[in-house]
Length: 126
Image (tube, rainbow, N blue to C red; front, side, top):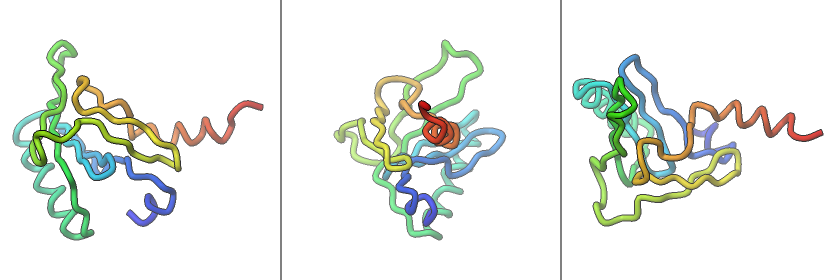
């Protein structure tokens, strides 16, 4: 967490498992899962980790990972204010990205591509 804070990044993957993953988007968390059992386990593991490092979330969203694209749905709110705006802004290497949990299956930023975006910025136009 200190490393992410030092590089001015608050959007990143917290954990990856064979049946899902947990990602941080600022003070929001998204749990992506392949089964309800996976969702429950990933959520429990997240709270154990958050308690250990002292991280407090504002909202938690969950997204089912279907086998067919036609079955994709927007993330659903598990914890947090139902009336709050579903949009937020996060940072990655000092760059701001708009995130929207209500527009569809993807929230607008693939955090696992962070290093690829950094590489592109480093090589940049010459």
